Length: 128
Image (cartoon, rainbow, N blue to C red):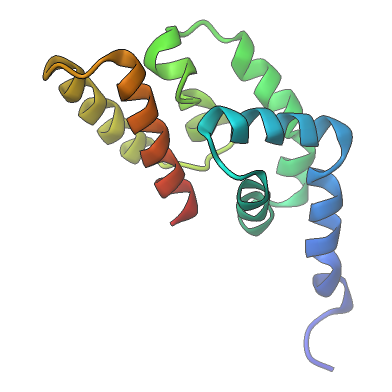
């Protein structure tokens, strides 16, 4: 026999976790906020996180929402959540993105366009 039996069922167990009501609401809110397909976001979570992270994701998200932070760009780009609470994007990559966005705004881009651009780049970082 190759591999352990329990290893074969982890993907299904993780899927059950991310589709449970609390987790599903959190996943949907984040994926909608990033303009991302919910199935792609779920697949990334299942692939990269263990079950305890997935089970605690709604609480981590609620704590992040309670943090004091500027609306732009931190809250609109899920900055702290994606780097600290659920380490999906590396801190260095997020800092480079924020610097890039700041440069684009200095160059005349509107904040709304900068958020759209930032979310696009975050989707690329998440799915790479």
